[in-house]
Image 1 (cartoon, rainbow, N blue to C red):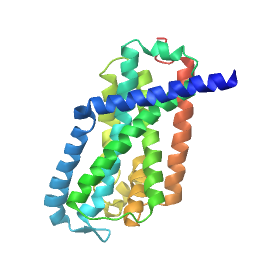
Image 2 (image 1 turned 120 degrees about the horizontal axis):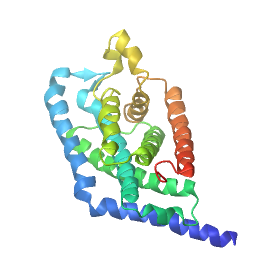
Image 3 (image 1 turned 90 degrees about the vertical axis):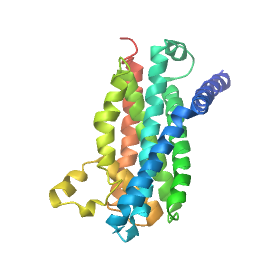
Image 4 (image 1 turned 45 degrees about the vertical axis):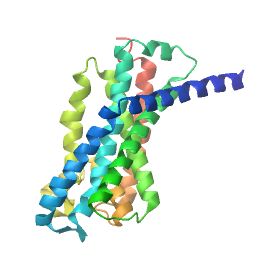
Length: 260
């Protein structure tokens, strides 16, 4: 009985991931091309044009400095966007109920959607990394830092997209948080500048931004330098994964946004 149930749960879990992957590939013009074009424009405008006037940041060419930040920004937005659109689409299409009455536990359903978000985030992030190599040269200094930071960050924002999708009642509400919260935090998270360049009051405020720690940890993997304490950065990322996962499972178990 236990083996049969485990096999059924695995089939359901893998089906969610395969469906998410097929969705990403099927609408590649919406999932892959736009973020790559946007990142290319950032490299051209901020890197090639403005970067020449900025000079070096932290001892590195400006293009080298912003490349990890742009890659991480792409991972964040795509991990978040994939889950919020996919899960809300399931709610809106009224086929989520079929999944909820299946033998799969809620935590496994959540994990499947999160895995889909992580898959898209890493896929698009990898493509943007290739684009970055077309504009500048940088090497991976610490492989573990690169892989762990991008994976933890992708999980955090995939979970955030899931929570947003649970509360959203229409398509306008799934775009509110990315526009008014996620985008400002990302742009003010040290993607385009080092926080050491900021005045004291802005420096203090920047340390309240969790995205700063994620970007800095990821940048450390490439450049070997960080604007923040890496132990604190990883503590924040791991804690965020645990808290967000527990919150998402609790809301899903309560039927928040589903039974309304």
